[in-house]
Length: 267
Ligand SMILES: [Zn+2]
Image (cartoon, rainbow, N blue to C red):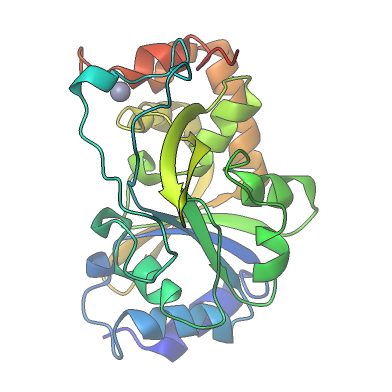
């Protein structure tokens, strides 16, 4: 059974203490964990880490008249919306994010971005700093901050595939792709926000990233660790060389062709 101390010791012993960790996790993959998901979070905090997790929640409304951008990966006629307002409450997170991000949101010291669909949450000594500058039209600001700083930062894929690896969206933006635009209700206003592309094809990057990760056993899970900066730089180059690599295999996907073409034309 994995304990809080096991997690903290693992991080310290492998040189990940006091670093920034972008965590994409399947809690279930760990097997039995003493104290549940909170003890995993505490293990990271005990090791001095700052955890950054995606906290997506798929609220959206239709585009206001005249704002339906060309090449925006969406067909408004065939789409259902969730028009509830974003409040930032801890239960406003999609179950697909996993239980660890949900538990991060429940902590009073957590800093969550205000983004109603593709938000992030951070906890730990550098949480506030990472979240500074985030706004609706700067969806990957926390990744930008990490990338532009010299901080030691890692991507942890804990029992999850590259289809869950949000930093790939940041690499898409760095390669020149414009993030999609969506609209959602925040408080009592409708806001325009940047939103990510389809990630169903992101496992296609595996063959190009061979040897870039370190693999460990943690509990019953396989943890893959990528150095954040090297990963983002490599994926950016791969996209520039072979833009189609990010395509999923659904011939009816609206997002992949539009994103590969460069994303929405903003005018
Ligand atoms: Zn797709």
